[in-house]
Image (tube, rainbow, N blue to C red; front, side):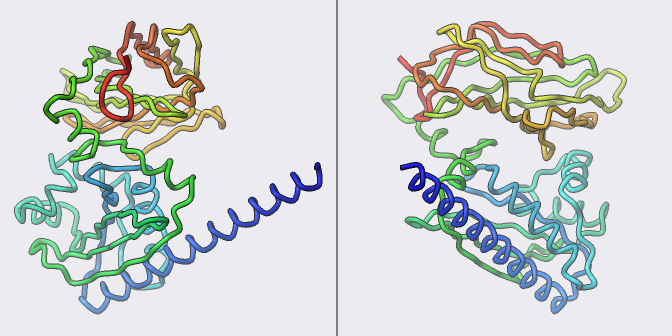
Length: 320
């Protein structure tokens, strides 16, 4: 029996390693295809936006953007690649959004003028049965004319399924459900607080599924002195107490394009630019699918504490 369990674990590990290597290879191929099409078009400077899944941003979409950015930067072509943090800073400083760049030539022109970016990579993630399809388009700034296209597919593993949970809201399925007639609207939370650096944390909602609870925030900076708000954050300093009396610490926090895992115990530094606003998520691994509200939600290192926070289930309504 022990030998069988060990063999099963060994095979799972091998298959997982093979799948990860295959994904790495396919992402490198995508990056090379993008780079080749940029050189043919004469584009010199490129930025990659987070790939969209059903109208919202996901961990997998952010992961792909980071990987494509990294692989483009070492593609060997004579192109300059803008990293994700710099792109976010440029958008915030100039009051632009990634979606707006693809819809308004004026916004695209403005980004090109202030940064020198002359090409933008964007894409969509689509689930097709047991596969994930990645579709990439490359547009010229400021005209927004599409001059390149690439695609790839991956096997839809359980790990990838978890990474497809929305971390920003657009036209997601859950948003549609909340507005559907006959569905009771979820309770709204009033959990808002300002940390010692002057950054404002405003909770949108906490969403419960079978294995995790994810709380969505907006982090903004409207300091009176118009300066940036620099602060550090650590997942281990954030915890919840449920209506059943159970306490959980956060497993991961993402603010903008930065992230912090509790397993490492380190502090992640973040600079909230004056006038800027970014989405943030705090994820807790839970073993209770009946949570209806949180007695306590506390970001200890930010000095923010909220009581009686309502929970929304993954189907978009409050648990009964």
